Image (cartoon, rainbow, N blue to C red; front, top):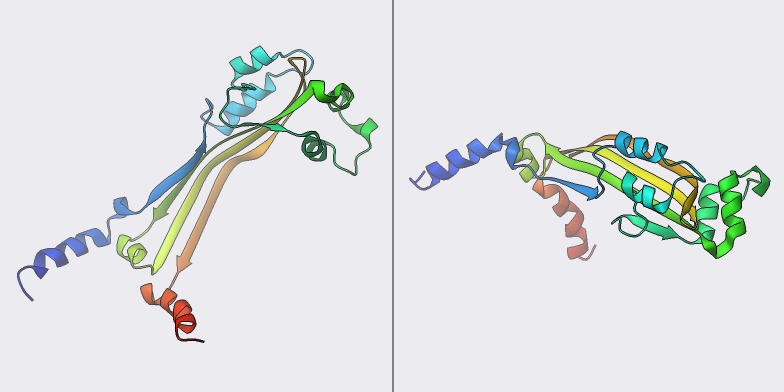
Length: 189
């Protein structure tokens, strides 16, 4: 063993257990809310037939400025909120009034989330593709608002208050495992 390989080997061994070097990442659909519960509390303050677009803005649901607001076309929101199996007279009053208002009523879908993906385990096993463990944590919040003439007629929420998922991938042959999937195609098989 030459003198140059000793520091390289020592560095490799030091990194072998270093979890801080594992990839981390996430996805965020920005909002002013730090949690699902905070967004749900804000939406609970929205009162159909009372809350105005200005008040929505103050609560964190800006119809024109929010980064993650989508105007939903009629067929999409009707299918989402009523569906084909529910008779119209069984639908919420706000939905019926929105339908009667035609184009004067708009549907808005808000999506907010904070999800983190963190790799866990041994750096060397992860790097060499023997074992990869990814832990996903976070939340996703969705709200649908029907608004006519600047006043909310209907509100609804959904989402995932607590996302917790562990994905584990083991490959006994490490970096050679994927080569077995690639080689038959390259060999004409």
